[in-house]
Image (cartoon, rainbow, N blue to C red; front, side):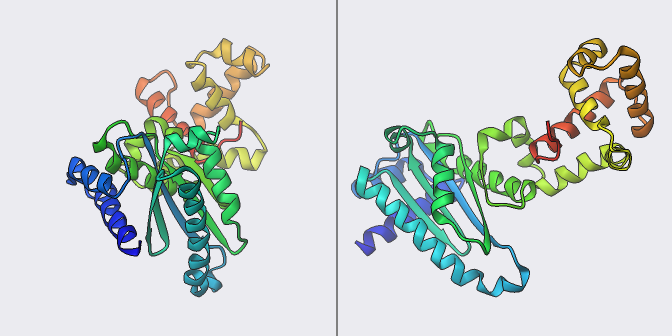
Length: 275
């Protein structure tokens, strides 16, 4: 049994972490071991961080406890539903795949499964982040889905100081940028574009950032935004002029609009805009 699990782990490593992997060959070898990766799957990426830097030395022992819990949960999944999941432990991370068939059989969404996993892992001295990919549709999808899940975790670590489950599907078009830039770099870009507005809102207890967000969401239509925010037309014009002055931009300029929309979407994704 140990040899079989090791073989499955080696094949999973090849499948999700090697871009050049021959998925058909891996499928054939896993099929001999009783596992079918032709079914749609989700890839899960798990990471743990120590909350207290002074306790960082205990990360390994805490990780071992969490890893054992993680293993027990997946053993339960497999024992109850047959071969529907595989896992791959690595240092302070765990990668796993779980079949959509299992998620459907449990009558839950994959987000709910991730949240249940987070609750069962528990613990107060560490932060746990779980990223979940969109489902696979072909054998060649697994590598890219593993990248998606990891990017979701990277975003979660920037976005929240608490344990978090993030779906790759929640990243939307920003996955294109996350593949080219780290979340920290995206945040720096957004803050750089909107810093003076953020400072003004904090100093004056204003909501110009929110005004700008709704203005962009309403296709930069002054009257529509004013109605939605129950603000007079003259009041909205004053706010927009103030925003342009603070940011030194022209909201009638398409390039300025694009950069502002991108910066706002990044802050929204990072949880920096509270609607």
